[in-house]
Image 1 (cartoon, one colour):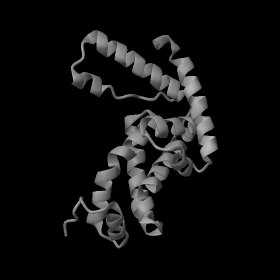
Image 2 (cartoon, rainbow, N blue to C red):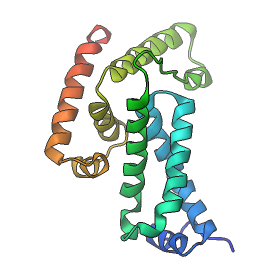
Image 3 (cartoon, rainbow, N blue to C red):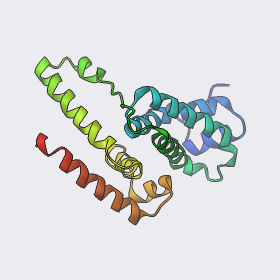
Image 4 (cartoon, rainbow, N blue to C red):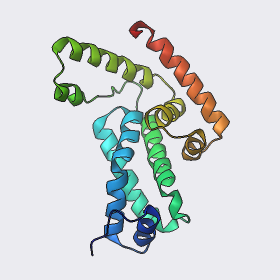
Length: 183
């Protein structure tokens, strides 16, 4: 049976909860890029982000019957990948380098000077993000890179919107200071 990807998300969630593999595949197609981006921007390592994203999607499949509100699926999935990424960050040794994928710069065909500057700036941002405590980093990534609201971030990281605002403010302050040479 082929599940139409144009179906409303809540319908797909309900079908997936009833065991429809095709409905869950449609949900994965809709959300896999966002799940991966959250993991990548939090972890800074493409391979680790792929593993974390895959783990989040597998966990979502296993726990989908426990989801009470089909409308809450995106926030539920974002919370899952956010927590898994935070756990992976906490499990790292401080000296582990985060590898970055600069293939986007190569694909755009930028000149060597542009690529070098962009790579240096990207590395400076990566290093600045890596210097943030994990709770600040995930809040900043979810707000600035994924465009989520304070309430949704609070739900994902299991805190209050006020705490999220504070974490994002401290993260922004740190990033501004760390990237001052690039202004």
